Length: 245
Image 1 (spheres, rainbow, N blue to C red):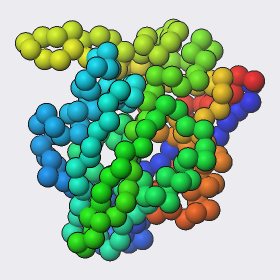
Image 2 (cartoon, one colour):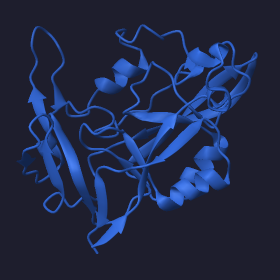
Image 3 (cartoon, rainbow, N blue to C red):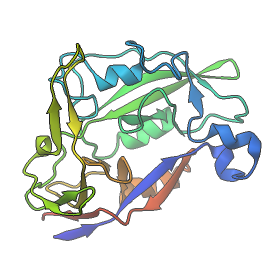
């Protein structure tokens, strides 16, 4: 086995990165974008609600399995006080476990690397009255090339090791109750060691870890070389990552 280096990251407004203590930038990070549905996620046509309960997806969320239907994104606006649009941006409408919003420049870089099941959705971002082409990268966890039998998992509260044989073992089925839609809910399990049968450049954490996504060494270097804005990258200390070959 070969040990692999992976990196977690935070999507943070570039203004906040450059001038952390300036109070006028406080409300730009991490949610630099807003929409007509911001703070209205309970509504059926809000993207956050749609991705949590996608139709015809076997009661799995959109970040478990990519839904079979296309989605038209509503417009997003850059919050007041921003001085620029960033290559990575975030908003409160969609839980950050589903993915993130990318510029065309960032999308072109990501498309050169090995990604898990994913889909890019066009997004219109409005800044200073002008439209900007962006994409939401939706990433699914289900079919990632993880060797579950060799990887290590433990209960979140007790640190007791748990045997996991496949992706669905990490969730429990919540049946319909009082008219609610049935769905799969993540169990209180964390991952301590992930072993890949095939190395990924973008890994979507399959359990309740500290970060939702991790970059490979080479994707991290490409992002830094291109000087993409709106992101802070950190060396991941846990879980540990290895290849099985």
